[in-house]
Image 1 (cartoon, rainbow, N blue to C red):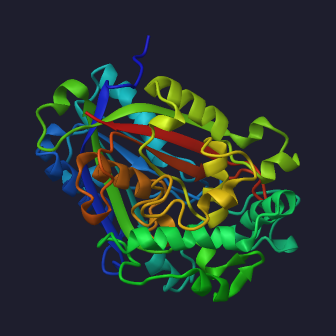
Image 2 (cartoon, one colour):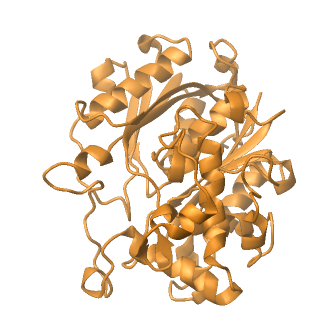
Length: 395
């Protein structure tokens, strides 16, 4: 029988690059992040014999697959290597899969890495930041679903209709995350304050979403090293323990059920991850909630149980999730104001917080944090999505 995740496995190394890197290819960025993570763990490349290529593709993950792997660039003596991911849950799925290889002894240390060239591609001949194969379905581009913002607005507008949520609620999330970004020197919007007035005056892209409701586009890579708790004791940095992980699917309900427009597939993912970690929402000291758009943050605040459904707007009002608020959420600045590497953005921040390395934004006595992932729509116009919950803790 497989072991429970709690305190059996640990993250021991972190490598992070985020910004604009037009001179480097995606595999080069991915390999460099992996090298930094291995170095951060105090390991040699000769000791890392497992690797996972994290595929953070939009939709169902149907994108052209690269024909080479980043471990070859580093010369890793891999016994196992695979690609995994769906939407914004690649890191969580990667951890869940890699722990099995560690458990049966097929690897001693596994490096998981993701790389992106979204900003550079958006400036190239194709003029597109993310490559995706259009899904077959009755709804799609002929009906105006031209980009992710198109179908994500279905969620935001339905919540506004059902619960009277004002646009200012989404603005409060954008403002709070920008406040965190201004405390994070690594955030791409560091040094660029944002007010609610700025938000309300930003241009509408697809009603009700304004420009500042939307996540960033950048190049970069994130990698981390996973190993057993026993081996983690010999690494250079304090281990960050994997306490629990789970995923859920919105396809568990009929996609046209309007309840799907005001909630994410949190319940199953949370139940599995929290049960493994033996925690409740009251035990969570900080959270990284997937924030491709602002409404997704508001939904998760409700779905994870910080408040009741429909009360998210009041919860985030007046800086409720920003510095000094009820719950520290997206303390890196998140995908909206920090940098975009899918849920790897939130995993990186959780590792940083639990190591006590977050500087001015450090959460005092942080012992338990969660990172969530979202995405992987399998139907045009995207009403089915996966959700992932990862619980990490200080050793």
